Length: 88
Image (cartoon, rainbow, N blue to C red):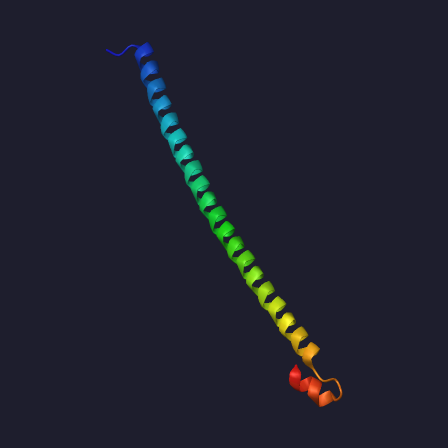
């Protein structure tokens, strides 16, 4: 025969086991969300790094274009409009 104290203990143990299982599920979900967030942050950092590198490349191209234009203009004959347009 099962005493009431034993039933209560058994119920409490089962309830505690369910709470532990739920806590583990919650923890696993938090960990998964953290890992997904970390992955997204890494992707965004890589995208930002790529954009910054592209900006530097474009800036260098623009700078070189201005340098070439300045050089052509310094060598240009400004006596006629046609000569200026040919050089540019």
